[in-house]
Amino acid sequence: MKVRLAVSLVTCFGLTSLTHVYASFAGPIDELLNDYIQQGAGPFVANAGRDFWYEDFNGKSCTGCHADRPVNQGRHVRTGKLIAPMAPSMNVDRFTDKAHVAKWLLRNCKWTLGRECNAQEKGDLLSWLRQQ
Image (cartoon, rainbow, N blue to C red; front, side):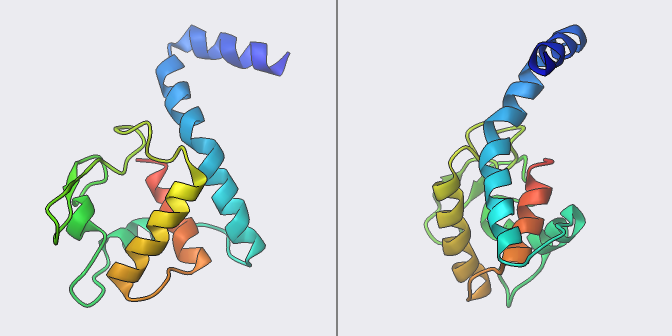
């Protein structure tokens, strides 16, 4: 009954593409956020994630490779490789695989911060990115 009502509302308001985009990344992000809560993190604050995105860590930041705005394509500063937008609104495949997200958070945090990001930092960042 609830699913039928939700589908009716979505169809009524013409939000099917938005719902598809959200559904494609909500699961893995929610799973990761729940993992971080189990590690003692939370509540997650999207604005803290935004601040983390722009923070300078000894000359490095997320924006160095991923562009100033997550809706834009980035380019790796060392290899020159193009990086698809981080914003799920622009890249529906971005947060669809939990293991892939965890792998790249680990790798990018180590490169940018010189250490692993803690559970709170990752949760805040993902909370902000999912809104983009």
